[in-house]
Every structure is written in structure tokens, then in C-alpha cells.
Length: 96
Image (cartoon, rainbow, N blue to C red; front, side, top):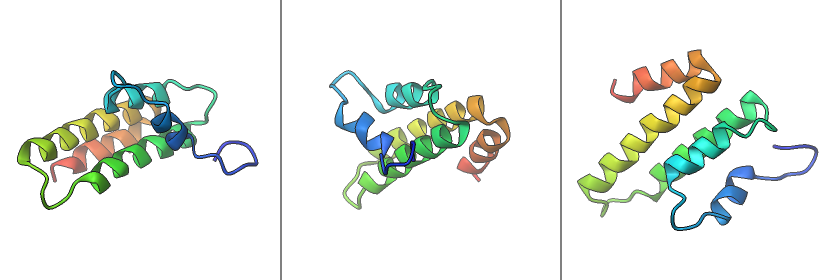
């Protein structure tokens, strides 16, 4: 959380998303938000990733599932740019 309040930055970013702001653009925006600590950026990116999987359901198509997995890999690469060991671990376990 940022500061002493209970601000959820991912929700702020998501609430301000426009049509052209994709998951990948949002991930990049979070990763490059240098006002946040490495831990905060990593946490927000992982929250974004978890939200994607939460939105999948039993009625999700294979295409939708593949898109989420592809976006996860992109998010993990963003994490790797912030925290290389954690990013590598996530990427290596994505297909394990």
C-alpha cells in the first residue's frame, strides 16, 4: 500500500482505464511508476495477473485462456525488469 492510507493503486489504474489501455499497457504503466517501490510495483503487477485469472470462468474459451496466459508471461517479463530473480522464477514456472 502507498503511504499510510489503504490506497489500492491497481484499482485506481483499472478504474481509469480507457478502451485503448490493455492489460499489457497497464502492466507497463505500473512497472514504470518509479514513485512506487520495487515491492509495490511487483505486488501490483501480481495483483493484476491474479485479477485476470479470477475473471476466467468455466465458460471461457480456449482463446481467452491463451490470451490470459500470454498476458501473464508479459506481466512476468515486466516483473523480471524490476526484480530479475522473481521474474525469472515466475517465467520458469509458467509452463511447468
